Image 1: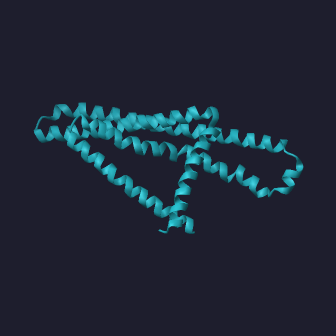
Image 2: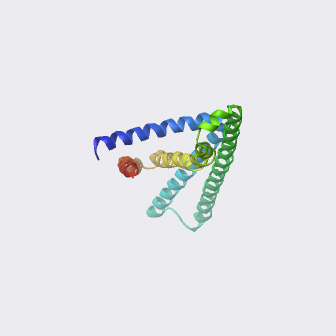
Image 3: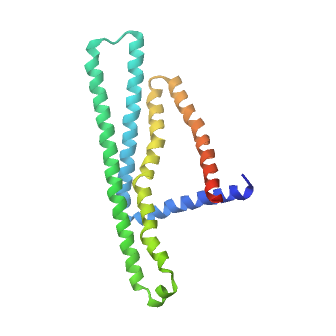
Length: 204
């Protein structure tokens, strides 16, 4: 990748960071609902981490011959609780992010329309109507979609492995170290792949 492409990719990353800050500003009072969605996704990651640790403990106890049929109901009950917690946290996260994201979109659209009504007629005559239509439709759909799905998913993708590693550390430090090592390896691979795809997108 040429120096120009690297600079373009870096500029694209800066623009995305700026866009994220702008979305946070646009959210206004709805941002607390989005924060609630992110918090629920972290709770989901905690339940996932506990489920993984429970699996490790069960496998280890089976290996040592410490479990019998009398323990099966207890293990099933624990997994049922953990699974129910994951489903509930994921549902609440999706519900909060969905509602607040589209409420935010409605607020912004109304604010834009109110602003447009206050502008002189000459402004609209000089401006391409397609720009205004795009801002009210496609651009806002992009903002709503990001706030609804990718943002909580990104938080969950980060919190999930961290929760698993923290809980595993209480059971087996070596296994926790292996888990974190896989994350450490995966991060630069993801960044390189993301940069390559960004470069391809810019060339197109």
